[in-house]
Length: 205
Image (cartoon, rainbow, N blue to C red; front, side):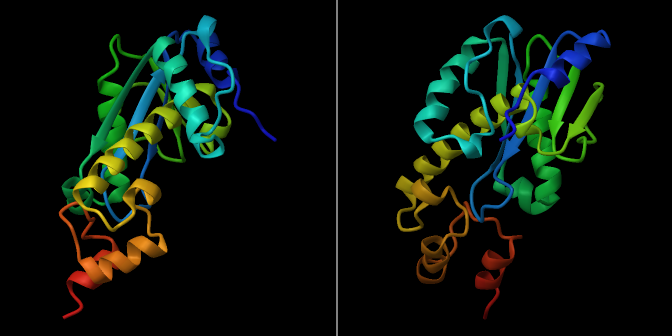
């Protein structure tokens, strides 16, 4: 099993970059809720043990690691709203969330490791796109954990205001309960109207 390591960060340090941020987003696939990104600059002397792609970790493990990430180096979390997702498209909105997370880092990073195959247009810093970055880079793995926890908390919160869709469990992804609730309960203000299953219900008349 591949474990993320610090080699991409070390390679950037070798080129003269000192504040290397890993950037990742979560929430492209859900039918509801924002898309969330995090940017993390780890302190190489205090990297939490057990960092990995958030999808491979239990909630308990993610929560335990979150404390270590927040204590090591700098981190920032940012979002793009449902309105932004619908007006821009999900890819551009997820890039906007990434740009916001990077902009919120203080002091600013000097190099970025971006999860995925594209570098957001709005980023002017030197950057590289890393496919499956959350499984390769410790900084991106750390960002994936913070982004997932932050977004899941928002969805748990929204689930209390809009019960029945199962957001506390499915985080807005199109599970059977969520799809059934869309048909039976209708579309909420937190649904992404540009996404086909939601769009189809709104315009089935």
